[in-house]
Length: 109
Image (cartoon, rainbow, N blue to C red; front, side):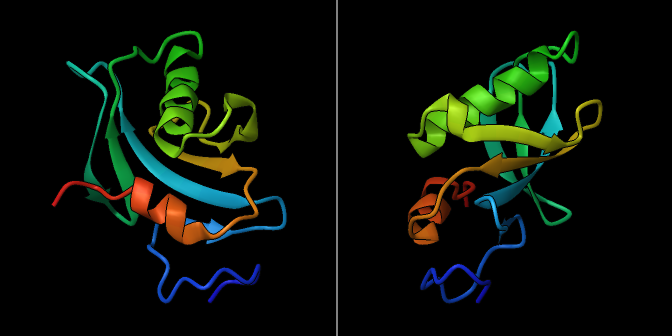
């Protein structure tokens, strides 16, 4: 169990606790027909994103989508890594039970 005290039995590969909150790894496919979570890819959540990868629009769309999915204010999310890449790491300022977030991030079966 990662430090932070959350009673999660086994954390998914895309999620880890850091000192600032939780880090989520995403594999993003921009210019999709619609924004949707489609599963896992190489240990990260795979997200098809309707936004184009131009002028930071895709990055902002990722953060807005994730905030909505997690039912958190957008201000609690920050893009840590991957500003110009498909592989991204997002920091979520969250100290609660990670089980709740894991349930909200479940990819389709």
